[in-house]
Length: 207
Image (cartoon, rainbow, N blue to C red; front, side, top):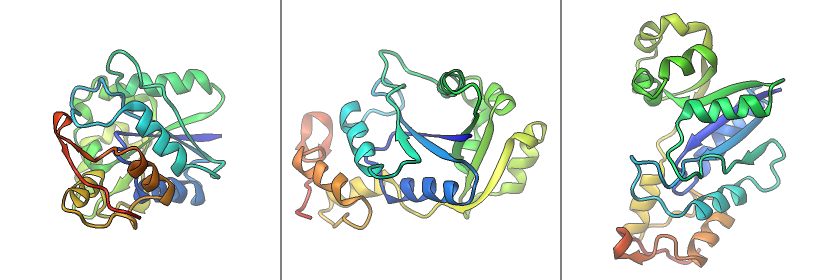
């Protein structure tokens, strides 16, 4: 089996995350996708809602999708690096092929990641293209690892969790961007309500 590891903050998870996973499965790049939300201890993200909230939203998004699941592996008392996550799933599924799903933006500076060369050497990467990124220059940069880099025919659209939070901040509708159950959970739990002590100034409107 081919298993795709899809990491990210998922703050909140949105339709593009789900579409990418479904397309990768539909087109045969992987058989299953595991979403792995970044833990709250990750030092480069200081505006995350709780681990439990993001895990629940992802679980709601993946409901009724037998080939998608969510892992709490990175919810540890210390930051967890990508290479550790990939090694964890390789140990857990030793008979399966582990793929790392990432965008060209991530690939562009993967050599600066903790053990980035180790990831490139030991795991297959499924690359989601952005229109503005130069694939050719990236492949030249990582030509040593070319056999492990798979450029998919899936393009990432202009949708991000940041955009969704900004829309909420500006009291614009987000219902076309997230699953209905995810939206309802966000509203019911006031995840992006006015919480100045956490840096949130967002107001969720009725669905």
